[in-house]
Length: 437
Image (cartoon, rainbow, N blue to C red; front, side, top):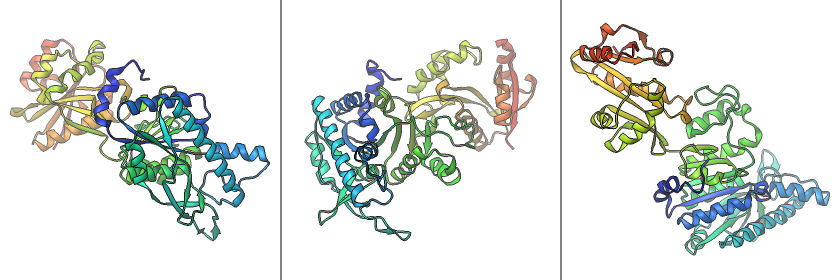
């Protein structure tokens, strides 16, 4: 986990987020958790770095507790079903209490906050023959009001309530409100702070993403949609709303949507200011990409491969050697940071290409990155007219055979110059080949 003392890690991200807006959606249960005061400190840090923050909060936890105290039975808790008059009153009371607690917390951290009527709503109406009464839908967000607050260094607080032009109030779903606010403000991040660690892989999810029940660290919007379409029944109900609204936000122009456990100390900072984060990231644009390495990547590649060199998985390479052959390397980036690399060395006379120096940061293993690097190298070699791809391996030969379709060969089949270096190294690597025609 990221620590506040790791300023270099934080400062690497600051230029990217400065003068941008984050929308942070806080479940009602998180507001009452002991870690909420730490979250407010994290928000104070974001503001000190000139990152705008708008807070959207839920109130389901408080509605449920207030109903128990008053002996009432709510018609709906999360603002998606029917809201009768009594439940609307519970929602108004509970939401106002949460808003006030947030204002108190911001004041305790020398931050100014304000709650206005920024959400214009209209009745959800009659759905499938059922009158949803006081349940509403977001009609529009008063962005002028929210921008005015942000411009004055005031943190807007948006409850799960809306009003119409006649002054009538409606109960809203906070996850949905957060999406609309993030879209209206053109936020670069929507962050859901909830009571679970993120989205878990449903039963049947491919092993390259995660095993069943394991945390899914990153999902493209297409991958998230596929889960909702094909494996919806395998997603725990508590996670379903967050995943659905994350997809809506991503499709609506929000580049990054994070779903994290708001009870984790420094979890918000760890999610925002580190590559791996602590929860699930749903990304709309190309969060992960393979690109040709540049000279500035040489040191990152050198650092990345050191552990594999020490374990004798990779041949030893110096920084100067990497710099000299940097045009042969390509890197796999996560949010603009290299987390894996490989090289493609060409032997034009023999029309053979060597896949070399395949290495994935251990934190990103078992996510299919190595296979993507192999496929990229194969495509590059084939496009350039090469007829055979080969690699040398001392420990990962099963992987290259099973995932890459390579078959064992002999050193005699190597290009002469490569065979000479092979014999000189004394590593006795297994030689593997793959035809590209």
